[in-house]
Image (cartoon, rainbow, N blue to C red; front, side):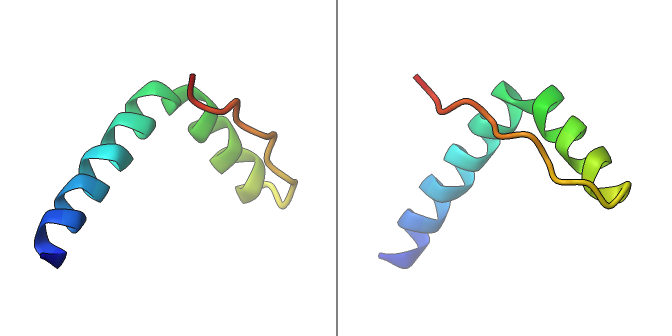
Length: 44
């Protein structure tokens, strides 16, 4: 059973990453510059 939940977790992660790629990269760059990342809008 854990394999199925891990599979769905990976799918959800990939979906969120593709939908918010620009925002995630902006947050990553801010963190690298030792600044706080901006909040990301929740999925609709």
